[in-house]
Length: 245
Image (cartoon, rainbow, N blue to C red):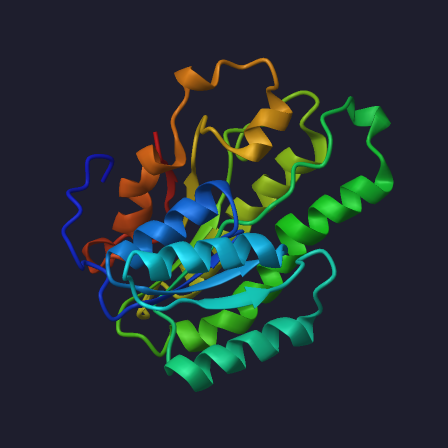
Protein backbone atom coordinates (compact mmCIF):
# COMPACT_ATOMS: atom_id res chain seq x y z
CA UNK A 1 0.00 0.00 0.00
CA UNK A 2 2.98 2.31 0.55
CA UNK A 3 3.98 1.90 -3.11
CA UNK A 4 0.38 1.66 -4.26
CA UNK A 5 0.17 2.01 -8.02
CA UNK A 6 -2.36 4.78 -8.57
CA UNK A 7 -4.24 4.35 -11.84
CA UNK A 8 -6.13 7.19 -13.56
CA UNK A 9 -9.77 7.60 -12.59
CA UNK A 10 -9.53 4.96 -9.85
CA UNK A 11 -11.89 7.07 -7.73
CA UNK A 12 -14.28 7.98 -10.57
CA UNK A 13 -17.94 8.30 -9.57
CA UNK A 14 -17.05 8.33 -5.87
CA UNK A 15 -18.11 11.12 -3.52
CA UNK A 16 -15.57 11.77 -0.78
CA UNK A 17 -15.70 14.19 2.15
CA UNK A 18 -12.40 15.68 3.35
CA UNK A 19 -12.20 17.70 6.56
CA UNK A 20 -9.43 20.23 6.99
CA UNK A 21 -9.47 20.50 3.20
CA UNK A 22 -8.11 24.04 3.07
CA UNK A 23 -4.46 23.32 3.84
CA UNK A 24 -1.67 20.78 4.18
CA UNK A 25 -2.64 17.07 4.04
CA UNK A 26 -6.36 17.74 3.68
CA UNK A 27 -5.79 20.08 0.75
CA UNK A 28 -3.50 17.62 -0.99
CA UNK A 29 -5.89 14.72 -0.41
CA UNK A 30 -8.77 16.73 -1.86
CA UNK A 31 -6.75 17.65 -4.96
CA UNK A 32 -5.55 14.08 -5.40
CA UNK A 33 -9.01 12.55 -5.02
CA UNK A 34 -10.42 15.05 -7.51
CA UNK A 35 -7.62 14.32 -9.97
CA UNK A 36 -8.55 10.64 -9.78
CA UNK A 37 -12.17 11.31 -10.65
CA UNK A 38 -13.90 11.78 -7.29
CA UNK A 39 -16.39 14.49 -6.44
CA UNK A 40 -14.88 16.00 -3.31
CA UNK A 41 -16.75 17.72 -0.50
CA UNK A 42 -14.38 20.30 0.99
CA UNK A 43 -15.01 20.92 4.68
CA UNK A 44 -12.99 23.44 6.62
CA UNK A 45 -13.06 26.48 8.86
CA UNK A 46 -11.66 29.14 6.48
CA UNK A 47 -13.80 29.95 3.46
CA UNK A 48 -10.99 31.63 1.51
CA UNK A 49 -8.81 28.52 1.76
CA UNK A 50 -11.66 26.25 0.67
CA UNK A 51 -12.43 28.52 -2.26
CA UNK A 52 -8.78 28.41 -3.34
CA UNK A 53 -8.87 24.61 -3.40
CA UNK A 54 -12.22 24.70 -5.19
CA UNK A 55 -10.82 27.03 -7.86
CA UNK A 56 -7.72 24.89 -8.33
CA UNK A 57 -9.82 21.77 -8.83
CA UNK A 58 -12.04 23.49 -11.40
CA UNK A 59 -9.06 25.03 -13.21
CA UNK A 60 -7.60 21.59 -13.73
CA UNK A 61 -10.82 20.24 -15.18
CA UNK A 62 -11.61 17.83 -12.36
CA UNK A 63 -15.19 17.14 -11.14
CA UNK A 64 -16.75 20.17 -9.49
CA UNK A 65 -16.38 19.93 -5.71
CA UNK A 66 -18.70 21.19 -2.98
CA UNK A 67 -17.73 23.55 -0.16
CA UNK A 68 -18.87 23.21 3.46
CA UNK A 69 -17.55 25.97 5.76
CA UNK A 70 -17.72 24.62 9.30
CA UNK A 71 -15.75 25.34 12.45
CA UNK A 72 -15.50 22.04 14.32
CA UNK A 73 -14.87 23.82 17.61
CA UNK A 74 -18.27 25.49 17.56
CA UNK A 75 -20.32 23.07 15.47
CA UNK A 76 -23.28 21.31 17.08
CA UNK A 77 -24.70 17.84 16.65
CA UNK A 78 -27.45 19.35 14.50
CA UNK A 79 -24.84 20.87 12.16
CA UNK A 80 -23.48 17.39 11.46
CA UNK A 81 -26.94 15.90 11.06
CA UNK A 82 -27.80 18.65 8.56
CA UNK A 83 -24.53 18.05 6.69
CA UNK A 84 -25.26 14.34 6.36
CA UNK A 85 -28.79 15.07 5.17
CA UNK A 86 -27.50 17.48 2.53
CA UNK A 87 -24.97 14.93 1.27
CA UNK A 88 -27.71 12.29 1.12
CA UNK A 89 -30.06 14.61 -0.77
CA UNK A 90 -27.47 15.84 -3.27
CA UNK A 91 -25.42 12.71 -3.86
CA UNK A 92 -27.53 9.80 -2.62
CA UNK A 93 -24.60 8.23 -0.77
CA UNK A 94 -21.11 8.91 0.51
CA UNK A 95 -18.29 6.64 -0.65
CA UNK A 96 -15.58 7.94 1.63
CA UNK A 97 -14.77 10.35 4.43
CA UNK A 98 -11.29 11.47 5.43
CA UNK A 99 -11.58 12.98 8.91
CA UNK A 100 -8.32 14.89 8.81
CA UNK A 101 -8.96 18.17 10.66
CA UNK A 102 -7.47 18.56 14.12
CA UNK A 103 -5.71 21.14 16.28
CA UNK A 104 -2.45 20.89 18.19
CA UNK A 105 -3.28 22.95 21.26
CA UNK A 106 -0.02 23.62 23.06
CA UNK A 107 3.10 21.66 23.94
CA UNK A 108 3.54 22.04 27.67
CA UNK A 109 4.25 20.06 30.85
CA UNK A 110 1.23 18.06 32.01
CA UNK A 111 0.79 20.09 35.20
CA UNK A 112 0.65 23.30 33.17
CA UNK A 113 -1.98 22.28 30.62
CA UNK A 114 -4.58 25.02 30.31
CA UNK A 115 -8.05 23.63 30.90
CA UNK A 116 -9.65 25.63 28.09
CA UNK A 117 -7.01 24.53 25.60
CA UNK A 118 -7.51 20.93 26.74
CA UNK A 119 -11.26 21.27 26.17
CA UNK A 120 -10.77 22.89 22.75
CA UNK A 121 -8.46 20.08 21.61
CA UNK A 122 -10.91 17.44 22.81
CA UNK A 123 -13.79 19.26 21.15
CA UNK A 124 -12.14 19.40 17.73
CA UNK A 125 -10.09 16.20 17.78
CA UNK A 126 -12.50 13.88 19.59
CA UNK A 127 -16.04 15.19 20.07
CA UNK A 128 -16.36 16.56 16.54
CA UNK A 129 -14.99 13.32 15.08
CA UNK A 130 -17.50 11.32 17.10
CA UNK A 131 -20.47 13.46 16.10
CA UNK A 132 -19.41 13.68 12.45
CA UNK A 133 -18.85 9.94 12.16
CA UNK A 134 -22.16 9.23 13.87
CA UNK A 135 -24.00 11.45 11.40
CA UNK A 136 -22.17 10.19 8.31
CA UNK A 137 -22.31 6.44 8.88
CA UNK A 138 -25.91 6.00 7.61
CA UNK A 139 -24.97 7.81 4.37
CA UNK A 140 -21.73 5.84 4.06
CA UNK A 141 -23.66 2.58 4.41
CA UNK A 142 -25.59 3.43 1.25
CA UNK A 143 -22.42 2.92 -0.81
CA UNK A 144 -21.39 -0.54 -2.01
CA UNK A 145 -17.88 -0.10 -0.57
CA UNK A 146 -17.47 2.83 1.83
CA UNK A 147 -14.33 3.98 3.62
CA UNK A 148 -14.12 6.01 6.83
CA UNK A 149 -10.58 7.17 7.61
CA UNK A 150 -9.51 8.88 10.83
CA UNK A 151 -6.20 10.66 11.39
CA UNK A 152 -3.84 9.84 14.24
CA UNK A 153 -0.23 10.64 15.03
CA UNK A 154 3.02 9.13 16.23
CA UNK A 155 1.92 10.20 19.72
CA UNK A 156 -1.48 8.55 19.27
CA UNK A 157 -0.54 5.12 20.57
CA UNK A 158 2.48 5.94 22.73
CA UNK A 159 2.28 8.96 24.99
CA UNK A 160 5.03 11.55 24.71
CA UNK A 161 6.11 14.13 27.27
CA UNK A 162 4.66 17.62 26.72
CA UNK A 163 2.21 16.50 24.02
CA UNK A 164 -0.61 16.34 26.59
CA UNK A 165 -4.03 17.03 25.14
CA UNK A 166 -3.07 16.33 21.53
CA UNK A 167 -1.57 12.93 22.39
CA UNK A 168 -4.56 11.92 24.50
CA UNK A 169 -6.96 13.06 21.76
CA UNK A 170 -5.25 10.80 19.25
CA UNK A 171 -5.42 7.83 21.63
CA UNK A 172 -9.16 8.51 21.74
CA UNK A 173 -9.33 8.76 17.96
CA UNK A 174 -7.73 5.36 17.56
CA UNK A 175 -10.16 3.89 20.09
CA UNK A 176 -13.08 5.47 18.26
CA UNK A 177 -11.89 3.92 15.01
CA UNK A 178 -11.57 0.48 16.60
CA UNK A 179 -15.07 0.58 18.05
CA UNK A 180 -16.66 1.58 14.73
CA UNK A 181 -14.58 -0.93 12.76
CA UNK A 182 -15.62 -3.77 15.06
CA UNK A 183 -19.29 -2.84 15.05
CA UNK A 184 -19.47 -2.63 11.25
CA UNK A 185 -17.06 -5.44 10.48
CA UNK A 186 -19.62 -7.40 8.47
CA UNK A 187 -21.01 -4.42 6.58
CA UNK A 188 -20.03 -2.45 3.48
CA UNK A 189 -18.21 0.09 5.67
CA UNK A 190 -14.53 -0.22 6.50
CA UNK A 191 -12.90 2.06 9.08
CA UNK A 192 -9.20 2.70 9.57
CA UNK A 193 -6.81 5.29 10.95
CA UNK A 194 -3.71 6.81 9.34
CA UNK A 195 -0.59 8.06 11.06
CA UNK A 196 0.86 10.48 8.47
CA UNK A 197 4.31 10.52 10.07
CA UNK A 198 6.69 13.47 9.82
CA UNK A 199 5.12 15.61 7.08
CA UNK A 200 5.66 19.23 6.10
CA UNK A 201 2.44 20.78 7.40
CA UNK A 202 1.46 23.97 9.21
CA UNK A 203 0.90 22.01 12.42
CA UNK A 204 4.29 20.32 12.15
CA UNK A 205 5.96 23.72 11.74
CA UNK A 206 4.44 24.89 15.02
CA UNK A 207 5.50 21.75 16.86
CA UNK A 208 9.00 21.62 15.38
CA UNK A 209 9.93 25.18 14.35
CA UNK A 210 13.65 24.43 13.98
CA UNK A 211 13.21 21.31 11.88
CA UNK A 212 14.76 21.15 8.42
CA UNK A 213 11.69 20.88 6.21
CA UNK A 214 13.78 19.56 3.32
CA UNK A 215 14.31 16.36 5.30
CA UNK A 216 10.66 15.45 5.81
CA UNK A 217 7.91 14.31 3.47
CA UNK A 218 5.57 16.61 1.61
CA UNK A 219 1.83 15.89 1.79
CA UNK A 220 1.96 14.69 -1.82
CA UNK A 221 4.55 12.06 -0.90
CA UNK A 222 2.17 10.21 1.40
CA UNK A 223 -0.86 10.21 -0.90
CA UNK A 224 -0.52 6.59 -2.11
CA UNK A 225 -1.90 5.33 1.22
CA UNK A 226 -4.68 7.92 1.27
CA UNK A 227 -5.74 6.88 -2.23
CA UNK A 228 -5.48 3.18 -1.44
CA UNK A 229 -7.81 3.51 1.54
CA UNK A 230 -10.46 5.24 -0.60
CA UNK A 231 -10.11 2.84 -3.54
CA UNK A 232 -12.02 -0.44 -3.71
CA UNK A 233 -8.69 -2.29 -3.56
CA UNK A 234 -8.73 -1.74 0.23
CA UNK A 235 -12.26 -3.03 0.80
CA UNK A 236 -10.98 -5.89 2.98
CA UNK A 237 -8.87 -3.60 5.22
CA UNK A 238 -10.72 -2.76 8.42
CA UNK A 239 -9.76 -1.73 11.94
CA UNK A 240 -6.13 -1.02 11.08
CA UNK A 241 -3.72 1.65 12.26
CA UNK A 242 -1.54 2.32 9.23
CA UNK A 243 1.63 4.41 9.05
CA UNK A 244 1.84 6.45 5.85
CA UNK A 245 5.62 6.36 5.97
